[in-house]
Length: 213
Image (cartoon, rainbow, N blue to C red; front, side, top):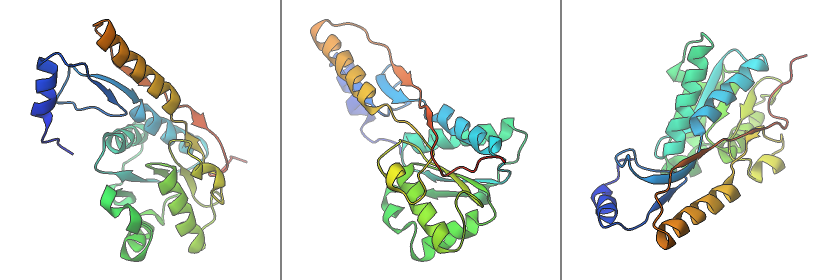
C-alpha cells in the first residue's frame, strides 16, 4: 500500500544515512538500494509449470497489500497472455493481511470455491495459502493434484507437511540476509555506493502438480 512516510525515507537519504531495503522496496524511491526476489518471474514460471502439466483453466489467490503479491500476479498475468490465453478475473481471489485468518472459512471460503471450482490449476501467493486451499478443496471432494494442481511460493516448512506436498518456488532468505548485511556494512564502513540485487526463485517440485501421463 502507499507509504505515508516516504518523506521520512527521503530525508534519511538526503542526510546520507545508509539504508538497504530487504524483501521489498518503494517505487517512489528509485535511487534506493534493495535486495529482493524476482517474484514476477516466479509468477510467470508458475503458469508455465501448470500449462506444461496440461492445465488449461488457471486461477490464482494473491495478496493485495504487499509488493510480492502484486509482482507474482503480474507474472501470472503475463504467463497466461504469452501462452495465448485469456485472463479470467473471476478466477482470481485477492485478500489482504487482515483477511488471511478467515480466507478458508465461512463466507470467504464459499467465495474462494466459487472462483476456483472450474479451474484445473491454481497459483497461490505462498505455501500457507496453498496449504489452506488444498485442505479446503479436499474437504469439498476435490482431488489434488488429479483434478486441480496447486503451486505455492517460498518453499516453507508447510509445503513439506501439507497432506499433498506443495510444489513451490524457493525463497533464498539466507542469501538475502547475507547480501543485505554486507551491503549495509560496506555502506557504513567504506561509504561505497551499492547496487540493488534481484534474486531468482528456483522451482522445487513436490506433489501438488499433476504429471502428464
